[in-house]
Length: 402
Image (cartoon, rainbow, N blue to C red; front, top):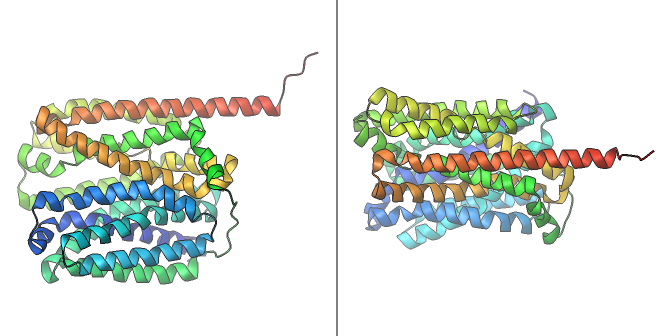
């Protein structure tokens, strides 16, 4: 096995580890509620707190650690992540659990940002999009296989052991990274102000909004995927895990499709077509939910394409920083995960509001609005890219008056 393939597998393993830690709480909410004697609705805030801290802390940690060796920074963050995850397993009460989840959330975003930076540096140009899509797929694999395994461990041995398993996985990942990561990557130093200049570029801030509304589109309906499957479509609770498993497998294929699109020179320009389909499907969903086959079918297609912009937008952030803002490369690699988490919060809050206003069967209408906004901002991103290339070519080839 080549060194690049081994590095790629370990990078996906890091994403899998982070995904297991983020998603495991969803699978053990009831167990935590009983252990800490806290209402289930209150325990649910662990998910919201994690996503919020993740999104807010990532840019600060990323910018403040950029002056240090990326190799040492990544390993140090994984040590802190290990401590936070292990403390979650040892948590004696709800407050302790909240603090431990905040520790892991503070490091998780920066870890995946640094992994993306290493990936973009290590990968040959023609393989970069494929590797980025596989790293994103690591999170999907965690939801498909990692979380069910965690729930099984929780059911058999107790929820604390689910966190201990992740801690063991973290130790293994740490050891592998020590030996496989390049230690002296070339990196451009920059002040905090210089790093943040990246955010003033319209190619970046339009893409940021595209990412945010992409995530909001998905979570405007996926937040309530379980009641959609059981309450509205009438599937039994025993078949629920299998249905979620199938959706998870489709999401892995969606990540691979996203990588294939990102590998094309016009990947981002194709996005409006996909979002047109998203809007149509989300508007049709209230009618599709009247039937099991059409309802589950529309969920499958949405799962395949709703986050197809993941890899193209990540490659766009990396390429823009690499060519014009090398001092901001790590910050650029974190933007997708930061604003995806903000989008999760926006989409899930919208789903809750729509359920109360128009009913569970029509919550996809909010997602249709966000899909339209995502399409608008990706079109603005493409226009900004085109203007930049035009201006650049004009500078390189100035018109000379005769």
